[in-house]
Amino acid sequence: MPMSIKNAILLLVVVTLCAAFSMRIFQGLDEMMGDQYWVVDVSQGDHGWYGMGLLPHVVKMPKDIVKALNTDADPTNNVEIYAQAGDFAGDSVYGICFGIPLIMFLIWFAFIIGFPDRVDPYLLPRKIFTIAVIITCSVVVNLFLMRITADFATDPMARIANVAGNHASLLFHNAGIWFAILFSALGTHSHSMHEVAAPDSRQWQTQANEKFSWMFILLGAVTVLEVSLVNNKLALPDAAVDYSVWIIWVVIFMRMFGFSPRYWIKRGRGISIMVVGTALTLGAFYLLERSTGTLGAGFASPVLAKALGVENQNIGLSLMISIYLIFWMEFAAAIRMNGPVKKPVEQKIP
Image (cartoon, rainbow, N blue to C red):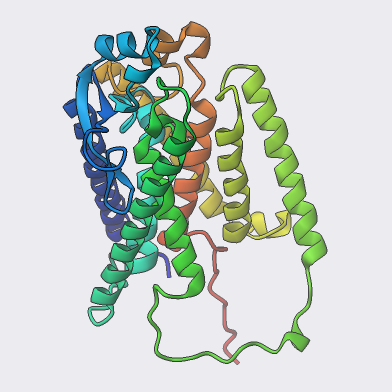
């Protein structure tokens, strides 16, 4: 049964508030930095690293002093930059950075906890523990990414957080999504005490040919789309990040709505939620940027135009569309409106 409108709105409000609070934490890190760099303090410990070699001792240093030290003729006084304002939140593409935690919290609440209408009080503590493990894994993995990148960074002006993946918030929330999907695939989020007998493989009827053919057709379509978007400066120039999200969309789309058009046409309600929700979200972020003047939408953006030039004011459009297609597709599944509409069967009275 589809979720009630009241519960659907409650779920959307809760994940939006959680995503906003999470983003606020990363914005706070940026505000702490101001117009300075965090540089690794090598005077403390082995190269300034502690906590299993993951977290650095850092100190604030004015940018002009850092640049002077790192560009003079003496390489021995160079300092290693850990981060600067913008590495953590990414306000210039706020709509993109906000979309990743939206997806993460939607998966955590709707598919792991079962919020708001399928919360089992008996299993809730265990499911909260599962999310705590996911958070821990996400943090540790991201710290490893930053440390590994730091070890390979030879340019003293390279920022560790940026080289490791552009924005720390994107890194953390992407890992949160990845681990949540992994735990779900392993079945650890359900904590079921009842083992289910394995299906008899002799009864399976393979549909691999049809699945693979339509998967490659969709991948071909998004490849052509991404090339077109890049050529028209509507996506990031290197295309790797944008294209990876489109590939994720293809996989989730086929999982949610079936692997061929004969299934898609029966799931018009869920596909409509995906498309209309994405269109409304793009409009909402466009208006938000116009009203705040500081939170970038990712497209038609004066913020991006000022930072990167007018020709690059739309480079976030590809990511905006793909991220919110995924979010609203997951939302349709969370409220159980991604399946075919079931019509009541009329029973003839004899």
